[in-house]
Length: 296
Image 1 (cartoon, rainbow, N blue to C red):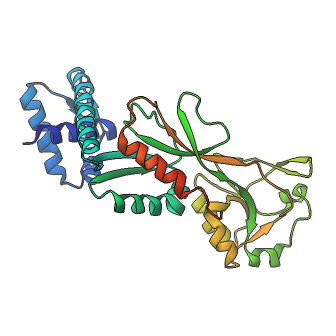
Image 2 (tube, one colour):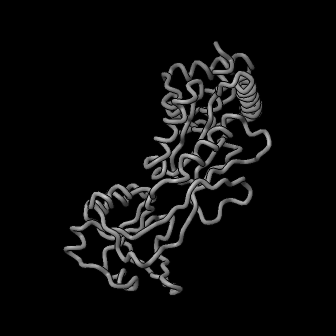
Image 3 (cartoon, rainbow, N blue to C red):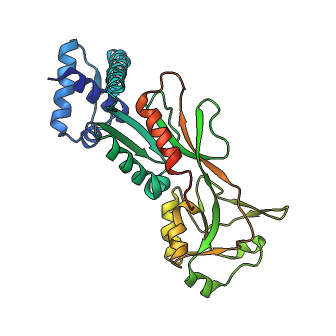
């Protein structure tokens, strides 16, 4: 059996703690995942994983094997990237992480365009708002929306992220329009669980307002709030990149348009400028150009 593939399978099992999740991610049967791990243990003559009905954990030998396997896989990817650089063809696999809403709204399409130009390259995208250690998770690039990116990471801005209050026309007809941000608590407000769940900030011509929100519905993903707003659920604060099309079609309308929410930035984050692979550099340059003049 291919020992590099076996190492990759073992690393995924160690990361996920699940043979089934590894099988789904690597698009192979659970039996094949089990076989690769068993072969690894046979080659090394050591038990690498402790298996119970509820969990999969690393043994001491497994911890050592994991570190060495990650080093071997990184070295192999580096060799592929160097060779592809010499041949002017990008190869290998990049690992990305991004919020669900931006991946859904724009990044998936951008990646498809990029891969159409580099057919020998593969990209593994993990979506979610949880913060991961890029080095430990072996993530090449994180796309994050923030006002203060992690100072321990290199941040390259991709685009400005504006947010506005929106609601459906049906909700406005039923509940009316607030004339001032301080009237928002009397409305049905929906908020992001991780960003401004209980407090919204606005400003207008030098006037700043802080509003305490009694949210009747919160979610940890902006696409959920978008769907709730489209279903006449109330007023919510959403990034313009996610609902610009719905505004143009009249499915949503801006609430309190003269008031602005704090502006954030969409960043590409990576651990270090040193040893940045040609594939990552190419993707970074592509994303900067792709999002430089977006109407949202």
